[in-house]
Length: 539
Image 1 (cartoon, rainbow, N blue to C red):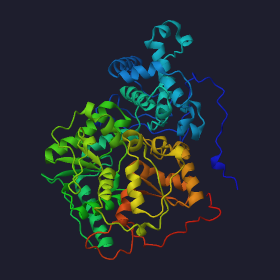
Image 2 (spheres, rainbow, N blue to C red):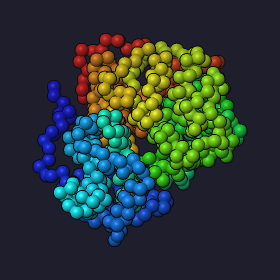
Image 3 (cartoon, rainbow, N blue to C red):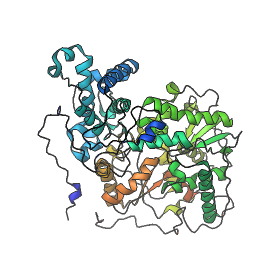
Image 4 (spheres, rainbow, N blue to C red):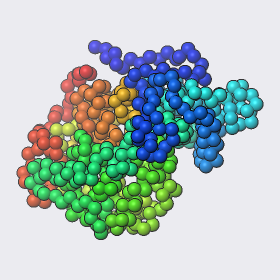
């Protein structure tokens, strides 16, 4: 039976790519930012507006603001100037973008998406463009161009898969970030970037969870973990003098399936006796500033280090998050400076010194746990995960952004008996995006999310059909939030989990009661058959 959902229109549009007209069709664009969130962040031109309206209520001098902003960034960021000049439109990136593969819209080819801003650069910032205009590849900056930027720069998840294949090393994600920065200058923001950032400033995390609710959530999780294991774990919050500050994404204590990852963290920390603290102020590892502007990224990242200084910890341990780690490993030292008031992280259990984290003094939980397993410091019973046939999704920012490729796999292979990789050209450095990163994991643009996530889902479908995979593991909060919908639509029967949920299931804790359920409260079950059914239903 043919599944019509896999049919993607391949006919190119009849109009010239230089025509900026776009159709703001329901399901393909994000809602505009609420005025109160724009005001809270001190961003320009707060107002009520709608991308589908003809009048966007731009400032009277919006054009000069954009051009001045471009001039400033061309001077400030050498990479931006380089990326504007060196592209030869070879097309190596064209079919590497999941949004292009899922939508077949030529303007979602990375080179063409970049050309939307590069053409304005040529017109106003190159001698040939100033003289010959369109003959030199330049375009006039009009309101229609601004709307086109908004539409397509918010159909880029900044995953950087295209940059892996670019022979000149052009990072299209950096171009997207500049495009969004310029849009911010005239108040053209989306709500699911601006609201989380504003909430983070207001109460410390993207979900707007107050400190008392943060405490309640952790205590409730500890109670649930006790029901499963028979062990009561401590919940240290804002404890000065702890060796380690642990920072996680807020979804870990307020959403599923993230919540089960939190239970895995708690089990691990208790078992090894880690001297650590949570913080109600730095209760968010994620950094939505990455999707807004360099300045916003810097402001949000500073909160973690301000709290580390206040609490007097030695180093920082970070949970399963995506953009937190790209910010830390690619921007932290130049934005916020080296964390020279902290120490180079050293595992208190194995003595391993994480020298690669000297400048940030922050270690990823998968690195930390893989090191424990390598030194045989944890006792695992992988049969507790025999319900699952597992594959692993390399979350874009930890994988391409920081090179965290083998450590999560090392943990999974020790915690699970049944693990299968997706096709080689869809994992590790070439991993496909979930289609919902960079603030695009909202409900109003669901069609584009599902289109953008199709290449990843198609790779999962492959191992579902070949090996009977029924669980997709990942280490990103956005993945855990959006992949369940993606799987339900494209690959029914596949659930989503964090790596440390599976570790927590397998972890044999000292003094635990007989385990009868996994961390989800589901009865432990015998292994599923290695040989999958002849035909797995597609929907």
